[in-house]
Amino acid sequence: MADLFAPDDLPTTTPADAPLADKLRPRTLADVVGQDHLTGPEGAIGRMVAAGRLSSIILWGPPGTGKTTISRLLADAVGMRFEPISAVFSGVADLKKVFAAARDHARRGEKTLLFVDEIHRFNRAQQDSFLPFVEDGTVTLVGATTENPSFELNAALLSRAQVLILRRLDASALELLLDRAEALTGRPLPLAPAAREALLASADGDGRFLLNQVETLYSIDIPEPLDAAGLSALLHRRVAVYDKDREGHYNLISALHKSLRGSDPQAALYYLARMLTAGEEPLYVLRRLVRFAVEDIGLADPQAVVQCLAAKDTYEFLGSPEGELAIVQACLYCATAPKSNAAYNAMKAAWKSARDTGSLMPPQNILNAPTKLMKNIGYGKGYQYDHDAVDGFSGDDYWPDEMQPQTFYAPTERGFEARIAERLAYWDRLRAERHQQ
Image (cartoon, rainbow, N blue to C red; front, side, top):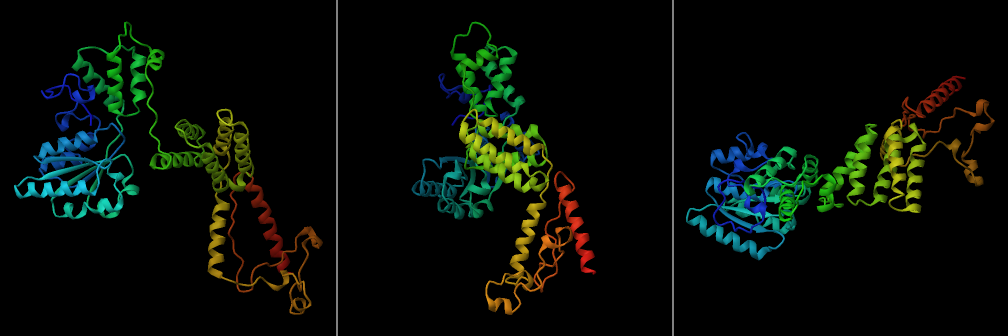
């Protein structure tokens, strides 16, 4: 599997027609770009190599950041046998053969680094099969995954391995790859400065993708340097990494929600665009906006939920792409509305109180008495009809006899809730006065 790339001292076995990414594969950990926080002297991998002793690790990071290359170089750096398998193509029978071979090599004094690509694709039972061989030292496991290990790997395996996070390659790391490609080929890329920047942006942090694009450029006769528009017409932009049922999905919806809560419409629009341009279902986003309107805005602006539901109706009526403007409008409305979670907190407090107090009867004066028996035992006796009272407010006590009145809803001083707070204070004052009479 091609990964990351060094121009010097290329192995003599690399075929002349090998992909550019394979020709630029690093020969040492020092040649790996963009992961100095791991491979540098103070990084976890750097310290392991310096000590000459590896522990089992899980390499978690986006595609094209060097997981396979680092694993191979790690084995070379500490003199271990490198045994690669892919969870996509391997099963339990393959694992048994690998463990048996590793045991034979261990008897001869050879330690095995077992590299498992796409380790998250193994099911829980298959992951459990690693445990005894990792524990007794038959293999040192290095797993590679693009998915969050917390969700995809079982707890027993995670407790025996250190999770190391690889970063998507930033602009300087990607620029270094372009420099190495130009040094290897002896040819400058046929790009104007703006097009070179566009090429780096199109890679979205994936070094392998970038070098494949570079290889395409070198394979075409381009008489004059391309500008950004010419590059866009020639090459396809990399599709953003976004699995709608995996961590990227949850990360972006969390970022959208937090940006809305923080009243940052610009950031909220950015994350909304990230989701919709990557293919997220618009109705899912609308459901989350409705949830936000009632959880984080509530009665501070009662129109927020109306706007969100109107956006849903508009999107269903117009479809994409016209209907997406309604989603944008709802997003902006929520981001710029006054915020309050008072209703949300009130719900949680009321639900807890209901669970804690069980089946307490309401006071008899506010119970209906549809039968003579119920009337005879006091149902409805003493009820004060609020519309007949002064100011349309009786100030009666509506709580069970065994309970003191509670306060669940405490409106903020923001938006419409400020007016609600005034009303509640007014009623509290009247109630206190009438209870003293």
